[in-house]
Structure formats: structure tokens, C-alpha cells
Length: 399
Image 1 (cartoon, rainbow, N blue to C red):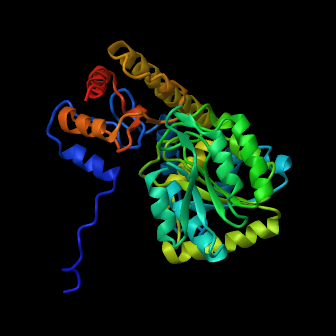
Image 2 (tube, one colour; image 1 turned 90 degrees about the vertical axis):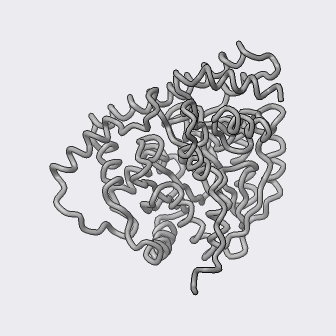
């Protein structure tokens, strides 16, 4: 028998948690593990700008034919302008080539395959901690993976000194993965001074930056969130960037992202893109059409873009407001731990400071689900469950 000897694979630490949550019969259960935005009703909504774009697409679309291997050139152009800003080419004097990808994860995997083919033996360095799937994505492509210092549990923030000391030692030719904003899982972002130091080190050391930019607009705003990326690109001639519309347009299930190559010249960028197209061709041949068409419409249509910016700001404000409410609620219930650092963190996620034992207690005794290490999705907090969550966390601090 071909399959009788196959062992059951362990559950994904995040998606498996969601499956366990769904099976939990307790009526007061709360899911703070899954990484999706939720509105106050607990729904991951379809944005109004996307609904209007879908109506327009329904009225105007002429064919469901294949898209080019790297996606429509127009899609790549609008994504590059969003990620790098309208003045990027004049500012950095670099050339950019973009390939549509199935979400940010797809962009990372395509980039990993590209690195394996053309940076053979080069190690991919990623922050400690990082998104659980980062190591899997690069490891599955055959890239050696190591970590560099990033988070300081004592300060609940980025350990800039330790990070910079580690980055200084990374050999030329290796690759450094950098979260541009809204660091997953900690919520702790590099500040402007830290980014300036990273840029200087990258230029001096000669390693290749690979930016994961999955949350643009969820930190401080579209322009503000790209500041660290541009600071580094002012100093280095080459980089890879993975971006996603899952969060900032709510296109989770549509799987809409892009991999961008920043090179010294248009010739070099186009050559890299030609190799990326070869990689795409043997993995999935052509990217999906619908979600990318929606994202492009929203970005190109002035009215839809204005509406999107309003909706994006509302999402960002909800997340920031939830941080304030959570900190205030915990402060009222317990003095055993100062949670004010949660307000300083950015994006959907927070390293709450809870131990694995406390996480287990909350799941087993209170039906509150969060990832090991204490990462919580702040955007998953709902008005009707906030008090219960705060009460339960305060109780967990006593075990």
C-alpha cells in the first residue's frame, strides 16, 4: 500500500489552534490566535471598496482567460507605487520588477526558491522570534535558516543593540529577513533611529535585505509604515520585498500579493524577473486573476481608493483602540503585571508577556485561545468578550 505507512502530521500551531477552537462547545470561547482582522461583530468583513470594485468588475470583465505568468504588468506597477511610494525611483535611483503572487506567503516562497537557485549556500537570517511559518517556507525551499537577536522580553520591545550587533556579523552574500512594520508575533517595531542603523549595517556588510511587508497601513499609515523600507533602500542597491493585500484590503481568501525585486538597473531587475517567472511556471503556472483585479481597481480608481483609505484608517483605529481598552481593563483588574507596553506595539499582534502555562490555563479553563508564547490577535477582541478576557488574564497571573 502506498499510503498506509504515512504518519499524521502535527497540526499547524496557528491554524490547528483555530480548528480546536471551532470544535470547542463552550459558548463563551474566544479566539485570539488566528491572524485576521475582525470588526466589532466578530466578522472579517468584505470592505465596501472591494464590493464596489466587484460590481464594476462584473459589469466590465470580458474574459476569464489566463493572466501572464508574473501577473498583469499594470498590477505590478500599482503595487510597486503603493509599497515604495510615488517618488521611489527618483529617490533611490533603483529599478523594480514585480511578480504577482498567491498572497504574501506565496511571495516569500517564490523568493525562497529564487534565493536557493541563485544564492546557493547563502543562509537566510530571520528575527528571533518571527512568524512561525517563515522557517517552514524557507526551509522547504532548501534555504539554510538561522536567527538574529530582535526582541527583549524585559522591555517588551526591540533590542536594537543586540539586533545591530548580530546584523554586523552576518556574512556578505547571506540574506536578512526584515519585518517592515507590525512585527509578527511581537508587535514590537524598529524605530526610525534603529532603521537608520540597519541601513548603514546593510550597506557596509553586504548582505541582501528581504522585506516582509504584509501589514502596510496597519501600523501608523501607508506612508509611515514604509519609512524603514525606504531608509534601507537609500543605502543598498538590491533587495527583495514580499507584500500582501490580505490584511489591508481584507482579501484573505483571494490570496493577493506580490514579490518585488529591487536591483541596480532595469536590465538586472528584468533578468531576475525572467528567472522568477520560470520558478512560477513550474509551481502554479499562472496567478489567480480575480483578487488582483480587485486590488488594482481599488488602487487605480480615485473614488475607490479614497474609500479604501477611509476603511483602512477605521481598521487601524479599531486595532489601536482595542490596545487601549485591553490595557485599561487589565490595569483595573490586576497590579501584578504592567501591560502598558501593549499600547506601544503596532499592528494586529502583541506578545502579551503571558507564559505558556498561563496560555494553557486560559485555553483549558477559560476557552480563550492564543498561540504559545502568549501572542494574541488584538483585532480579535470584541466588546462583549473584552471584560471576560481581562478577568481571565488577571486570574491567570495568579497561577
